[in-house]
Amino acid sequence: MSIDLELDARGLMCPLPLLRLKKALQMLEDGQVVQVLATDPASVLDFGVFIEQTGHALLEQSEETGVFIYLIRKG
Image (cartoon, rainbow, N blue to C red; front, side):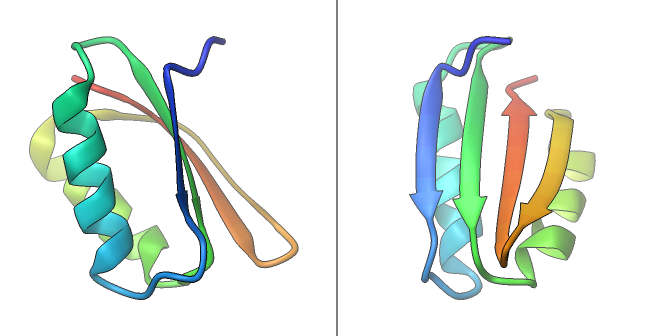
């Protein structure tokens, strides 16, 4: 899968990772994919609710040594 944009939100606390994701998605075309790296545990809930409400798709979510990794396709 190709990643069109990488967003590093490590070290940022709520609501900054979500705000950065919203801004990044505005730059993408429908169908493009953004990879987000975040260390804020609240991002799991924040991103999940945001994606449900906006029609984007969470393609993958994982966690590696305290870093949450999200692949999100713009809807």
